[in-house]
Amino acid sequence: MPDGNIDLSNATVRPVIDGKPVDDKVAAYLDSIEDAKPYLPKPVGYQILLGLYMPPEKTKGGIFLTDKVRDESKWQGKVALVLAVGEQAYASDNVRTYNKAWCQVGDWVQFAAYDQQGTKFKINQHWFALVTDDTIRATVPDPEAIQ
Image 1: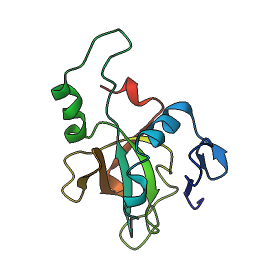
Image 2 (image 1 turned 60 degrees about the vertical axis):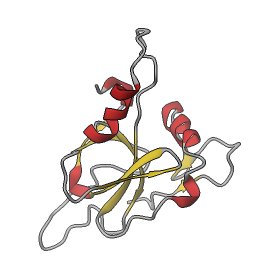
Image 3 (image 1 turned 30 degrees about the horizontal axis):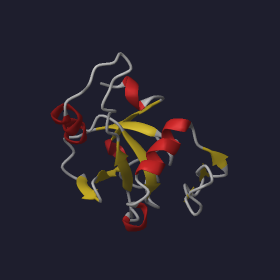
């Protein structure tokens, strides 16, 4: 499995994950959390660090979303960007067997918001979550498509 490092060292250069440029939505999200990056925790063990996706103020159809509707996204745990993966995530052991990782750094994912092992937290007005690897339910191609 690739080391899952995001190269964020130069803000003027498009972010790169494992040597590949990221798509526009990932790049825009990474730009939006620029002020939080120095404070992000490094996940350990089976933990995965997620950046919670917040829907735009205006939908593609031109409808303005209220702050309440947008704020509920962080609690419902609909979609997030995988920012970092702990060293034991998706590693087979005597309890769990994985054929491959379900997600990797740079993937948009849907995760279980009800997971009691997860921890949501805020850094500089941005919401993040630390969840266990088996909390990830699916990868999604476009965070705006999930409502």
